Length: 69
Image 1 (cartoon, rainbow, N blue to C red):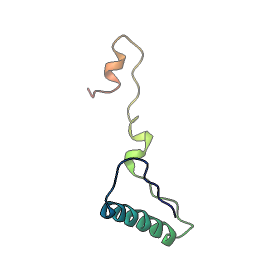
Image 2 (image 1 turned 45 degrees about the vertical axis):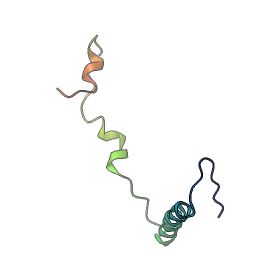
Image 3 (image 1 turned 90 degrees about the vertical axis):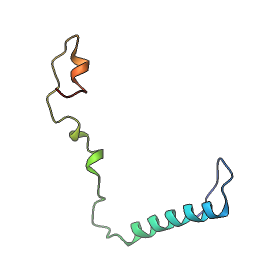
Image 4 (image 1 turned 90 degrees about the horizontal axis):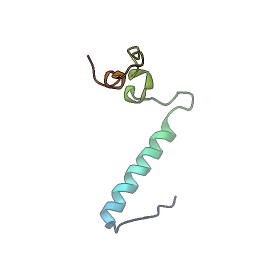
């Protein structure tokens, strides 16, 4: 594995912390069963945003697409 610093001048401690996170994530992915789908957060679900019907087009429709009420 090769890590390349593009910008900045990190300290050895910062590089060690970043490498620890990357290695822990790789170990977690390697330990997960291969048949299970990856879990997704409800925040990334697009259907969460469109729970109501979109209003019909009108001059003020853009205000009702975001703000509740």
